[in-house]
Image (cartoon, rainbow, N blue to C red; front, side):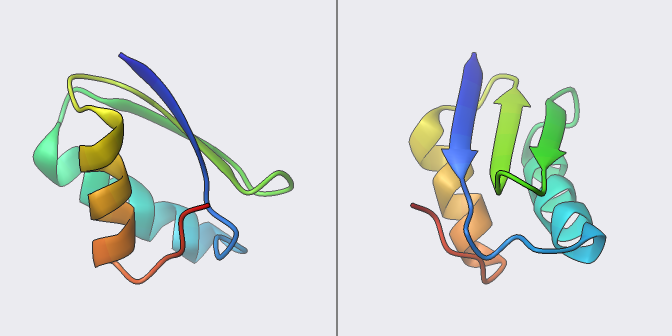
Length: 64
């Protein structure tokens, strides 16, 4: 499932790493890509949109 989520609080590579690690902890096979300039996270994996949003929120980031 391909999911795109806007994460306005993602502003650096450390943010990308934190978000990526949180998603991969729950779906190790997921492909996670981040576009810092657009504050966009794209996930291709087994998780649904609400699960991904919950993981991003759990590590302290905002989801729009």
